[in-house]
Image 1 (cartoon, rainbow, N blue to C red):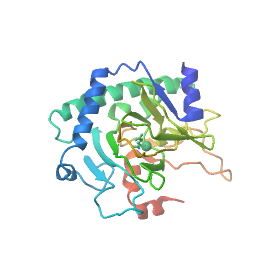
Image 2 (image 1 turned 135 degrees about the horizontal axis):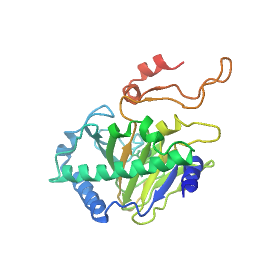
Image 3 (image 1 turned 180 degrees about the vertical axis):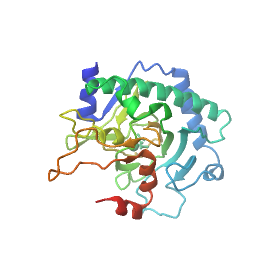
Image 4 (image 1 turned 135 degrees about the vertical axis):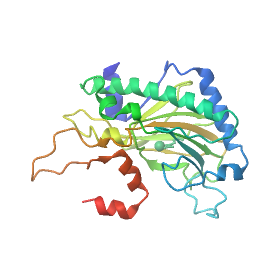
Length: 286
Ligand SMILES: O=C(O)CCC(=O)C(=O)O
Ligand SMILES: [Fe+2]
């Protein structure tokens, strides 16, 4: 089991978890609550339009912003909430915030267990990742995406290819498939097992273990295709290091004159600050 998990992290950066212990009733309430959020009137949702990744609650849409056909590369609405270290939630629909708190707690619990398994698969102490990432103060985000049917799916993407920040992303979907992961130079469609939670390993785990004597974890490149028929909704939660964790490769740094380290270290909080400030990125990059 641990070996399989290690293999999945190294070869794929992606796996599905069944028998995860998250009650089915909670998962379906979450699905319904998310649908109800997206069905709120547009002006209710637009209250949450913001700029930064860690705005406490943020809503965005590819539609109705005057982008016009041919200029719309994303085909989705999304909502994001920062749920830890401080808890934030959309205030509607009614009861949603209690549901979100419970759901995210279960996701974090599952994440801790998986990170123990991943630590073991890297031949590290079972608590290694949870400890060095200060998972008890994890920066946890919840997000949902809605991809409406699209008359011209060839010319847009639900979300273009990207990797996720953080340690692990958990994902469930409803309505239609569409997620694809990049594996051995090919895009592979993900067809989830019913009730499974999809997991991908993310940037801040790859930075730590980029090539640790053959022990490595990949941050998987993925994207979402849309279709002409059905709306797809995905529910995403991301667990990361604590905002103050300094994340850097743990492998020995190269000797002078050798190849430079693949990644520079920085606090998780600084990473978020940089992500939306291109000028700042130019200043810190060698
Ligand atoms: O909708 C999906 O399946 C993927 C969403 C995603 O990649 C993201 O929100 O980062
Ligand atoms: Fe993603």
